[in-house]
Length: 185
Image (cartoon, rainbow, N blue to C red; front, side):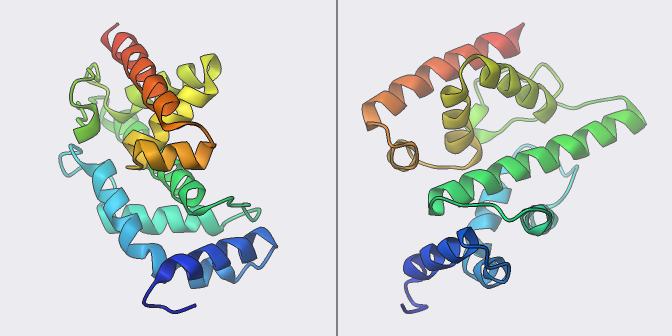
């Protein structure tokens, strides 16, 4: 294992975390920090300067990853999927907090969701719609999370979920149409 190619090191650290090594996450962070910053930046797109900034979002995600029970990450893609979900939750929590103090939500436009109406409620609307989708079809909700919040390609999502790529693309199209309908109501 060489640090010039971090993939084997990342995989090894994820396996150590799975085995219960609590220090593995501390060693993992420097290796994935850059990718987490890109992921946080994608989440923040359209946030209009409100809420946690990119670095704060990465740090809060790290705190949530390291708090509580050790998480069993199945793969690199699974790790980034969970990190993405945590980032989304941090932004939703921040948005709810802002709304509770000033009662005036703003529209959030994620680059990946440009054609989806957020009905003026931003992340909260998308989050609530994804929760409804998860109750209806957990696989589609997870694919939306991986693609639009995690920035994963259809191929990466297919590998993470052990599905054929054509099935992932079809399910994403259906999930996107479902979300479009839900958010426009």
